Image (cartoon, rainbow, N blue to C red):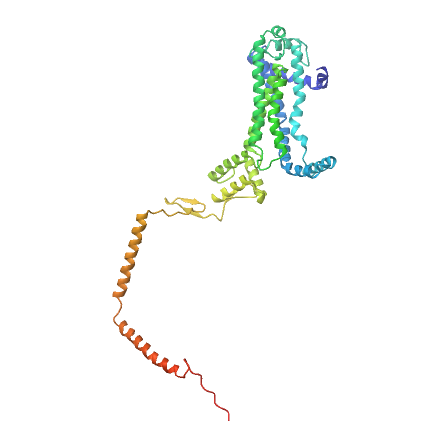
Length: 424
């Protein structure tokens, strides 16, 4: 522990100073020796650190997505050079360099807050050991030792002896119940955060070893927190629980507003965006325009959810533009509904109603009856002059038969060709 303290001694004083400043504010509200004053000071320290780490968190998201995009290419390299590890690593580094991806970027927030974590651990351990540290003097040390969070002193651990706990004015049962509940909450929040990432914000169309690793970490991290949590002071448990809750909320916000392409979260997001656009006829928020712009730029490379979104806009008479805006489509015809209200989009084809057998038989009988009536009317209305014409046709046919018999006696049918004069 002395080695760790010496390594992080450069940040111990700033951490203790921040805690004391917050304690002076909350002490005026809740009392300087209360657990509320010291506990909220630690919570405020976490919030301050995480706000400062937001740029690194954004960089972590971009790095994680870039790594997910590169997984198919990485898998090809691993299969191609599976017998040559050196060439495999060279090709991996070349791929990272070409795409501008850094695998360590996804670990930046954890690495950046590690010094604060160990510095806080050392501060609380010094309070439990009755040692002054940083800007925490003797009076503040006594105040911190008196502070209890739901019956558990700020600096005790789950594994502390009964005599040490009683020396700080608490019972061993209360300490172990409080620390056990906090460890369970800390592990559960870590598990839910990782599970939310795996089930909602992962591209399900690509199956890579990266997904298996993330799935394994979903179960490994909570176990690690449970094992190491029994050796953390109550104040450190407050710090780590607050960090996990912050991470969970921050990730929920990112998944809701900027999901990974191809994930279930993107399907839900595009469904909400489609409903908003079809209702208002435009894209209102700037980040929505950025996403629509990216979808339009993909062209034929769009995934299933993005194609469904673009097709839905077309059916609603809208078209997404390259700048992320949405306008009314020129190809969509305006159709008036039965009540006279204009609706955009292609009209649906109306299917005829299916008739019963009795209706079909009655319709067929009615059509046959109408056909017979028309035929009888045609025969009765025929003029009498048509009969001699018919007889003449018959007579002509008879005379024609006589001509035909003469033609058969030696003349050719049809018009005869004139004979050419003979040359003498």
